[in-house]
Length: 399
Ligand SMILES: Cc1cc2nc3c(=O)[nH]c(=O)nc-3n(C[C@H](O)[C@H](O)[C@H](O)COP(=O)(O)OP(=O)(O)OC[C@H]3O[C@@H](n4cnc5c(N)ncnc54)[C@H](O)[C@@H]3O)c2cc1C
Image (cartoon, rainbow, N blue to C red; front, side, top):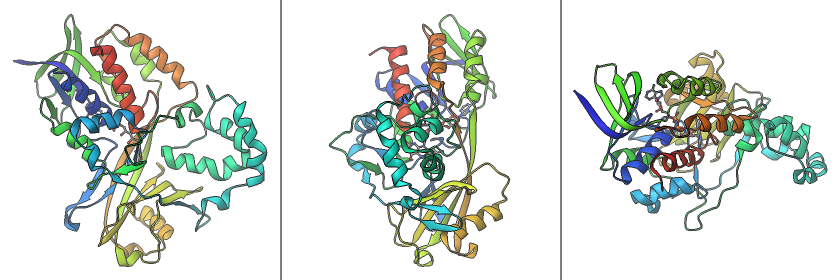
């Protein structure tokens, strides 16, 4: 027997949960199917039960008051009042075996000489290396910006599209500039999934999807058949290309052109007293290092522990080698690590000209009851993902 829904969303990262939230709030019977046993995707406040629930962000760690779509969901859920401000701690560079200040890598004269070009250098269609070398100088790009950008996007920055990296968005004055929650960013996906009128099933394997006259039929590996008038794919582009039903071959070819970047995250926890020599800091930016960045949990101090997530390049370092690298950067011995866990993260590797590709994808989706969302349309931040989910919601359901 088949079950019928108004809207099935595939993928329970923030994009999919955002899409589901919007349709469920409009009264559509909405189901989310997630492959993994955990919801949240790249949002993962990794909690250590043996350490009294001390947690470290293994993925997305900061939300801003410019995240209007995210904030409107938090308003709906009554969560806006619960945000915890993040103090502005600074990052350090990890360069040539030393922790040093970010300013130590800046070439101020070159920056001053290049900066006036900011007004005439076009951004559209250019990659990060070309655009930022032009407006701040190529030495500043090579020695500083490149590494800072890599730390932000957790992947090589040179070929990333400049127009997608940062975008000015209006700020909500009633909300603190940067925030998290007492239990970390995972509070958001968990609250979306827990609300009435929205069902989330984890550990789901989708065998095939077929399009029919009144919508879509989803067949699960356990033989269940689910029908839906509308379907939204909220999975990475490689997974979306695999899931697309017959009849969407041209769309599949476009989506398959977006590559993914892999990263290995190593989360480490220390006793507070063992990291005494290290002042509270936001984290490290790796300069020609095996890791792009290390993000600390110091923004929400804990009485007993300190934690960091090291985001490693996908090179073949063993766990022991990663531990050595991370502990050297913190100036401690591996024996002082009291808890550790590795997490595999994936992010889209967008390329110059990406927005043109998205236009083609949107043309192929026009008039269909199929939505597509994710962090691979507008940009990779949580807000970019939710902006896409809202645009697709309007296209499918109106308003
Ligand atoms: C280390 C790191 C740090 C970051 N820091 C920040 C930050 O501070 N601020 C910020 O705004 N953004 C940050 N981001 C980016 C942001 O967290 C992500 O881009 C965003 O959460 C992605 O959401 P998504 O739903 O589009 O994709 P994902 O989170 O990747 O979710 C996709 C979901 O689809 C599921 N799935 C895949 N295939 C299938 C299938 N066949 N069937 C069913 N389900 C499937 C996956 O299991 C996953 O749950 C960070 C990302 C990383 C990795």
